[in-house]
Each structure stands twice: as structure tokens, then as C-alpha cells.
Image (cartoon, rainbow, N blue to C red; front, top):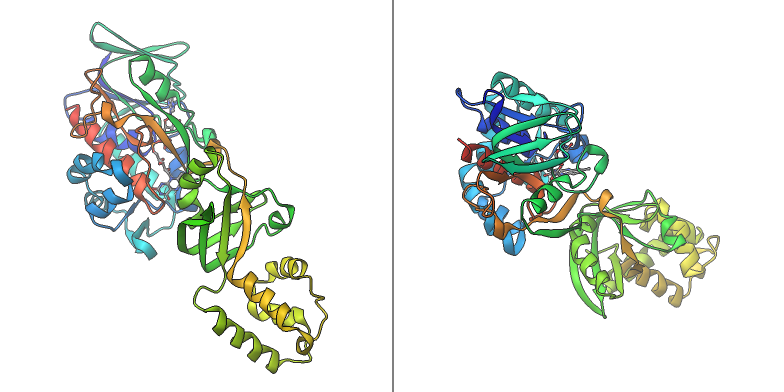
Length: 411
Ligand SMILES: Cc1cc2nc3c(=O)[nH]c(=O)nc-3n(C[C@H](O)[C@H](O)[C@H](O)COP(=O)(O)OP(=O)(O)OC[C@H]3O[C@@H](n4cnc5c(N)ncnc54)[C@H](O)[C@@H]3O)c2cc1C
């Protein structure tokens, strides 16, 4: 049984790498099977290449951020918390910093720093890594896991599946783990996009691509009722809208669209100003530049990329002198600034989502160990587990904490 590994891990992403480090002891043989030529391909993309690896929030807040099922993470987060994670890196010489909203990044602003740290640690711990090993099939025979690819079979006493979700398939996360788990008797909650841009099927809105709005209020309406509202940043893309608040809301919007509901987005471009205050401000500007053109007034009030759009929808000649603006034209402008609306027609496909929601049902995993309740000696870690968090470092913390716990539990 010399060629039998004590622990095999499918997937060399954040969860799999952390699991490998923790599973390895001085006595056992641990292997990571990774289908790419390198580890952590998705990790390198995180935080726009800067890797927002965790949050500085307290454990209860982290659990809350994962919603109703967040309690599942209690075991993993109390054993290996965000503080432990920060210590893990800092002990290895990786300096970290905390930014707005408690987002933690490496001081280098490079995700490569985080990946290098893992690579070094895996090497130091002598964890074997087989690259370009795409597991095709997993079977259990004679109390051993057989991990089969085209040419080879790896045997292991314990298995950790850390194959990630199904988004950004170019990074290797193609949902293979769902099939392995399903074949072994697990229930898979349908993978759906979470943290994904929204589609707006309107050429005029799409012409705003590249426009980034800060300090705005974004609300979503369904049947004339606001169901989501947040202050923050967003941006227009060639197909619709994206940015932090949009991504955060996308799962809820997706659910409503799936039920055939009509969804409207509403932007308040001047959330700090009541309509009456805004009106006074506009009149002040007009008094300051009565002989200047309407387009000059718009330049004072709006980002450059929005001006053409506003001219079109308010149907006012851009050369009109400000002093000639009627009260109705001013009132239309105020309405636009406070209540810019358009319809959301869909969400971008799963492959473009930052995170996949769905995966292995948490009811079938022991939250104290990450072991399967169905197949002994089988463990899960990372995004494959059906629990997704918001942006802000939560999803990587989940990958690291569940990876750590799965790895430790194999000892
Ligand atoms: C663009 C982008 C930016 C993001 N930014 C952030 C951020 O800043 N902060 C944050 O918290 N989260 C972020 N996320 C989410 C975060 O990256 C994931 O939640 C995290 O990578 C999940 O880790 P994982 O190890 O579970 O899976 P993955 O990172 O998906 O790794 C899975 C690994 O398994 C391998 N694999 C799959 N199938 C097989 C197979 N059959 N055989 C062998 N190997 C296989 C894959 O090649 C891959 O390397 C971002 C995601 C994206 C797409």
C-alpha cells in the first residue's frame, strides 16, 4: 500500500491549498491534484488582482453576512478565524493592511504575494502536487478513494473535494466536484450565479458603458415597492450595470426575475439633497451663469458621460441659455437627478459570476469537521459548499476556514 496517500485533495485553489497544509503531518502522505499547470488561478484574479483575502469584522458579523445558513460556518470560523488567517500570513512575512469597509489586502497589493506564500508553505511541508491532473471520476472501493484521470489512478484513504464553484470556468472551476459528490450520493443544490452583473436591454443605457457613479443611492423596485436600497458605488457596462452594490443585490434580483417579475433600478444621483434643496441649488447655478448654455449647467451637476443621455431624455437643446430654462424643464432635470430609472432585464450568466451559489447541501456536511454525513472520510472545503457570502473578503475567508478545518479533521 506504498502508493496510497493518507489524504488526497482535488483542487489547488485557496481551500485546497489551505487544506493541504493542515492535512500534512510529519508522518502522512498528502497530495493535491490540480488540473491546471499552476495553483490558485482564480485566487490571482481576486480583488482585481489585489486579493481581498478576508475582512476585519468580528465572527458574528461574518456569520451574519452569509445569511440564514451562515451559522454553518461557526465551527470553521471559531477554529480558524479571520484573525488566525491574518496571523498565518504575518508569521510567514506577508504584511497585510485593512482598507475601507474592513477589507483586508496584502500590503503589496498583489494576489501573487498570497499565492507565493502558499506555494512556499506547501513545499516546506512536503505536500505533493500533481499538476495537469484532471480528476474525471471518483469511486470508493475497499475503503479507498480511487481518483481517476485518463492515464492514472491515485488511491487515498481520505479525500477532500475543493474544486470550487462553476463560475469563471477558465480558471479551472467547472463544477466537476458536484458530479463527484453526486455520484457518491450527495444532493447538489442547483448552481446559480451570485455576485454577478445585471443586464439592461436598452441601447441608451448601454451607451453609458464606462460611467462609474460614486455616492449614489441605488434602489430596486418590484411591483412598485422598493425591495433593496443601498448607498455606494456602481458602474455601467456594455450590457448593463455592475459594481459593488449591484453585485451584492444580484442574487435577490435574480430570484425575482426567475419568478417572472418586472424589476426596475432607480438611481438617486444626489442622495444628500432633498428635491427642494436641489431646486435652490440649480437656481443658484442659473443665476451664476444665466448666459451660459444648458450643457454648461449639466457639467456642474453631472459626470461627463451622463450629459448626452440627459440631453436626450430631457429633450432640451444643449445650446439653450440657462436663463431661458422653464420651471418644467428644471423640474424634469430634478426628477432625473433624484429618480433615474430603467428596467433590469436579466443577470449575466453563471460563468461571469464572482461566486456560485448552490453546491453541496450544508445539511449533508458536519459543520464541526467538514466531513460528509453520507460518505465517511470524504470532506468538502471552499466554494463547492452551498453557502455564498457578499463581496469584502468573505468568500475567501470561507475557503480558508473550511479548508483549514477539513485538512485538520483528516489528522
Ligand atoms: C474575478 C473574481 C474576483 C474575486 N475576488 C474575491 C475577493 O477579492 N475576495 C473574496 O473573498 N473572494 C473573491 N472571489 C471569490 C473567490 O475567488 C472564490 O470564492 C475562491 O477562489 C474559492 O476557492 P476554492 O478553493 O473553493 O475554489 P477555486 O478557487 O475555484 O479553486 C478550485 C480549484 O480546483 C481545480 N479543479 C476543479 N476541478 C478539478 C478536477 N476535476 N481535477 C483537478 N482539479 C480541479 C481548479 O482548477 C481550481 O484550481 C473572486 C472571484 C472572482 C471570479
